[in-house]
Image 1 (cartoon, rainbow, N blue to C red):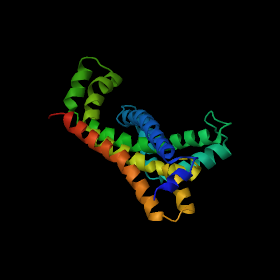
Image 2 (cartoon, rainbow, N blue to C red):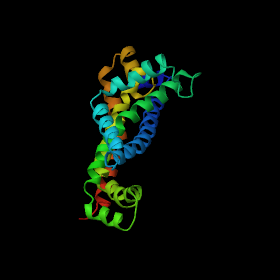
Image 3 (spheres, one colour):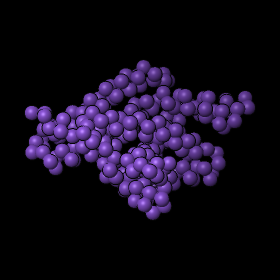
Image 4 (cartoon, rainbow, N blue to C red):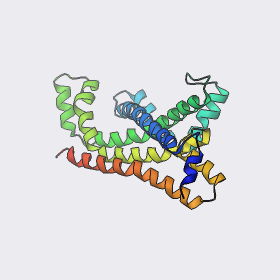
Length: 225
């Protein structure tokens, strides 16, 4: 029944899901870094930085992810000749451009999740830190963000799970991940329902343990008020 899975070598079934995992992990790390910086901008005392953070988040969150991913390929690569250091390797270039698009999109949601966590930190703590001479960056890095991260592990887990599922959009620019292989199989095989069920199960295997672990971690590290 499952013999057709071995008929594909570029990518293989496991190779396609490994590509999905790589897209998820690298995009998650990049989104966490950029999203944290955006959250810092949104609560910054500098009006220009607050304005940039606000505009970026509100604009990017309201653009469909497919549009952003396609723009990274057709816009950045084809028009502006952005190769992401992989001008001689089309597959690697597509992978890196997809990462750029996922980071740009997902970081907006990471920012808002973190900003909600920042709002849970009592104002008195920040005021006390400033009273003893700490700078804004020190207050944010030493006092506010550690508590904010603990408060938003649950929401960040939801963002990560959504990112895992969103990686299927990378198939639109030729990244050989799970959805790309599924599309090829459905076009060539007669077992559409079985193929769909197998790939759906694969994504459940990727996302369910992640959600359960981060849900447990969220309760374990919750800040007691």
